[in-house]
Length: 211
Image (cartoon, one colour):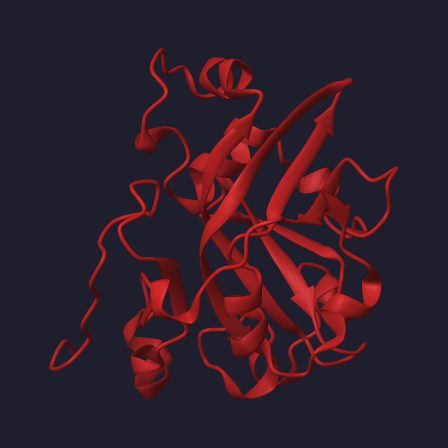
């Protein structure tokens, strides 16, 4: 595997980046223990004009400031005060674009993942959700702001040898959008690999007539 360079993350099109991240390898190194998984599902969040994004309207707070860093940083936040979520910051500094990693396919350190999740079987429930995969891979809030392109970082992204073909990628609305997101709920900015069992549920989301 080859560590992705900082230049990879500078694309201003976060929707395109969400697709490009499919098939990349997410690696963590915690207390000298390595674990990894292939990214099989992502969601794009686009800075100021996306009501589903933490940085909507240019909102820069103690929580969201990492989103305004240059592409290639990890944005880790706590969802509902419980689960850490890991995002890949993309685009030039100040754009506040990020891609949420929603699911991975386990590769290395599976036994350690099962121990962290309290699951004794290697099955999709282990990592088929953004909160599940962070626990399994040992990703926590203190990793917020880490550089994904540095070898010494505890969380890194690598290129994979196999190319992801466009026809294997499925797109649709993002998961869990609230009524406050409005029309942005319908944006087809969730991407996942077709027929991959590690993808999170539900596979199909429809906000038509919900509010």
